[in-house]
Image 1: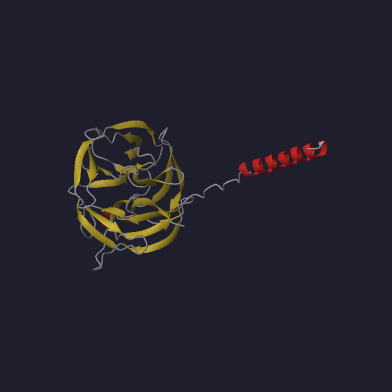
Image 2 (image 1 turned 90 degrees about the vertical axis):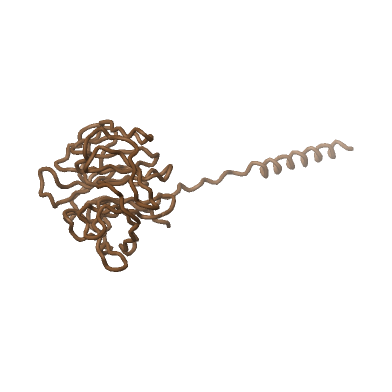
Length: 276
């Protein structure tokens, strides 16, 4: 091979190696950041035996966005709600009725969030203030306004069974919620607590005062932000029928008003994620 041939041979080999390397290590394309899920905040009336009505709220202001409709069953019977929660495994929207509900007091029910249609499941057996579903296990927890017991609720029958004690006495307000990792938090009287959900425990640990003027009747975590939202009203310095939307800091217990809700006698609050 001539000197020129050798040079051409090595030049071709070098070009081939570069092309091979370019094919083997393509420039990575940046991946778009996933958009957060859409969520809808629901609230329902039920205090003092008033007609149960389902609403959607603006979580940024507390304003009413829509009136979904009266919480009636297929026969037209009305239900007042004490608590609501969305089940992340089954996609079912559950509610528990007030002890003063016009129909089936102290019942576990299913709510259609699109129409407000109620389907009763069964009696709870106890007067509960709110429910919280652990998103890591699907277990429904509850506390009572008549005793210090900590409960789980059977979603097929509605029966509430004691699994521990909060050691707080009866709940006053009694908003309860589970965060994205399954930690249980709630408000009793004017104090913010975490709850030990382990079977046979249920004990409450004080985090701090809410610094609110009224009780927190219901609660839920926004699944996007993992922020605790509370439904404030009654039992304090303001008219017992008025309601406010709050957020609470789970590290200090301090709650801050987002804004007034222009509907009286609300007693239940829950977020539902919406498929895009």
